[in-house]
Image 1 (cartoon, rainbow, N blue to C red):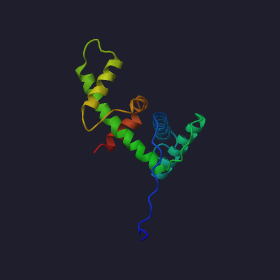
Image 2: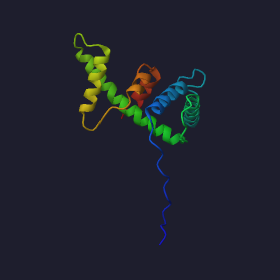
Image 3: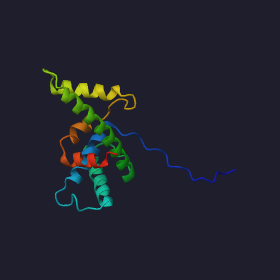
Image 4: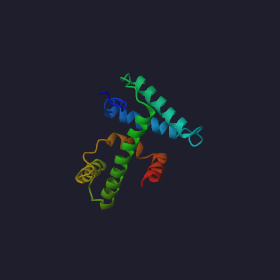
Length: 147
């Protein structure tokens, strides 16, 4: 007896760290575009982000798995949520401010704090944090999307 439901698409391959990094760089380049930055529709923004993502992967001679815009948007949401939680952990570590702790020590402490929270799991987006952390655009976007 044939099923009346339509078959779902197969899940795409997992994102690799280099592709997460490229996605964050693409998001920043599109959102910080001084000409179109705030005057573009959501669809234009996401399509330009996909174009920047694909262009950078091609430049790196990385295999380009066809990713729909919705997949890239969903992945960036995942990255942003994890990085936002990490930012809170990092800020907490900085507030303690132990004498003699280097920035790399503080970073390790923040990762340990993040991972000590059972629902967080391991922190896989340190390279993304390094890219996003100093961007005013991402900071404002992160704040407006935390709910």
